[in-house]
Image 1 (cartoon, rainbow, N blue to C red):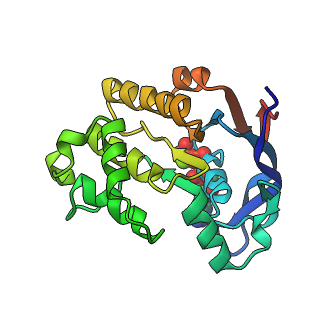
Image 2 (spheres, rainbow, N blue to C red):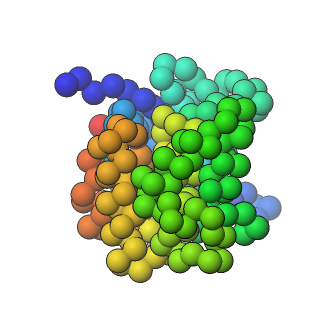
Length: 227
Ligand SMILES: Nc1ncnc2c1ncn2[C@@H]1O[C@H](COP(=O)(O)OP(=O)(O)OP(=O)(O)O)[C@@H](O)[C@H]1O
Ligand SMILES: [Mg+2]
């Protein structure tokens, strides 16, 4: 089957002003393509710029230069408001820490994320909580569930608006190996069932190898697995 292009990053550059005289060039010209239904791992040493790149792909941060083309649309040309709308509708995020709202239950945490769309998604929240095997914890708050369970709720939250692209920054980085395996299996299960597209930053070599493709960042550029 022909691979369908979802996102293309073209010559992304990003630097940070560290001191008055010192600028740190983190991304020096990143070119990459992400195809629909893929699970792509992003790897590289600590400080290589993996999180920086993921934030730029997800429009949480702007590059100094370069283009992000999402389904044939160059998104960085749009206004901040339009970009925020795009992000809410098309991108799901999973981070190392679950960042669930402590005052709300699992069900509510996922539901709140859905409210931005203006639709009543209660039914879908329940379906997703079932999908991540957390339905019996739906009415518990984050402090009443384990770290692994909370991360499964965070996965459900990332999926609630049916984003075309899910970006995950070390989604298993805070979990023991058993829970790590549960999350990895869950990601493959969701891709196989719904054909979601995932870009995942990971330090876990075994996990990276199981992904469809590995993109390695070194010295500000991709040194491996460009296509
Ligand atoms: N807002 C910022 N201001 C200044 N420097 C930054 C900023 N964000 C990131 N950096 C620097 O840019 C470099 C890349 O950071 P980034 O977080 O992308 O690395 P990473 O590959 O995700 O590392 P890790 O594996 O440790 O998470 C680091 O040297 C970091 O200190
Ligand atoms: Mg990082």
